[in-house]
Image (cartoon, one colour):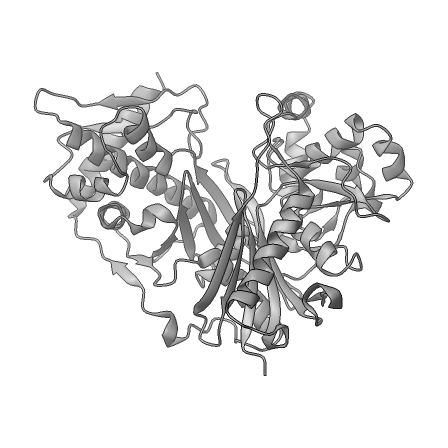
Length: 492
């Protein structure tokens, strides 16, 4: 009897495996960190063989530790760090170079030249993305140009490319399946999100042979079966999505206008925009959320550069707090921010400002200001940035979100969540199950094999914690005006 869904959550810093039961509850979890390599400033790499070995280790560990038989697994769902690039030999399976991680900046100059030559307009129109080293295409190009013989071997059809989902799937199936899903394909700068296929002009622009690219399939559907020797039995692989899209699906944001925000070091916000891609005027990314039954759902995506990182800065650099968790109590002990605002533009400002020359600042200080006011202002700054982002998404899409679903570490901060609700004037829904990313991968796999139904939220998952807005409109406008003034000062 099939009792479980196995979710493989391959992230930037670790590989995890989670088992979900019929009630969508996590019954087992294992995790193993992945070593990052920094050979030069701005370069970030990992060993693809270590990624595979660690992911396989944790998958086997949850089965062994909880005495679960492979035959009890209905299906496997995969979610992954996006844009990270692996190129390997088609016959031997040996990577020709380390995985180049999404954070890597070695191709920044190359991408800048694309902008200078007027290519970004074409890229944005075709892919919904920007000419940036963040995405996969320039990473593939770098590997083919710098690894001896790689360009020749790629042209001869001897090399394969994949984002991490494809690399894991290829290994799980014993090299029999070279495929990805729509969500990951849409993050490569090689995929036409309108025609839903690899684009010959894009491939030619980045000098990437089409033969290297994986088959693109629905995010929920049969990808293949694991090689029998891996687990002792064949297991269906029937769900794949990039981590942020998986979180959107895991949060049940299945209708246009529904949005989720993940509070981590930065923030990732995605809004479901339905069956048509929305072109952003605020510099947001247009991406594919998922494909199910041949139908594509699109999303707008934006990021806040500094979220949890602001609190780490208070702890590690200013020594104002000893523990990030303490910030909730400190902020709650104050009646207001005392007029203090922090603009954490340590790396410039992203959407909707896109000002890389903006500088971080603290404004509104008086003799009555204390370290507690700075702590509160830092938490409020996270919420203000999220409001900026959601405002831009609503304006671009013409759709007003009725609520915001949240996940990530900082979502546990009750002060931040209540202030977020107050400043947005929208309810904030924090799920009982905070494993939104893994749950999304599990759901995609489960609906493909009829283990769960799409959109169903079993009662055993637990109820959301809901934060409801309490500010008057006058107070909300006053506070947000203070934030906008502070941002204006940071850009002078």
